[in-house]
Amino acid sequence: MIRPEAIADAIGIVTWPTIVRLLRAETRALSSKDFIVTARGMDYDHARIILAKPCCRSSLPSR
Image: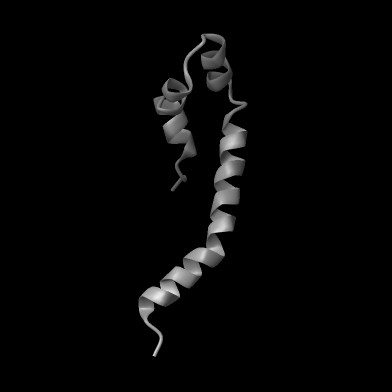
């Protein structure tokens, strides 16, 4: 009998490229937003830009 954990692992291994591709596309789209460009112009470091509230809110899925 196949364990449920093995099925979950197999599904995770098969679907992770799709999830990563979607996350990368969303991140690339976000990088051209005005508030990111402005933050780069103000010489903010990467951590400050990533943890900024607009960036975090924009990367979350909408309901």
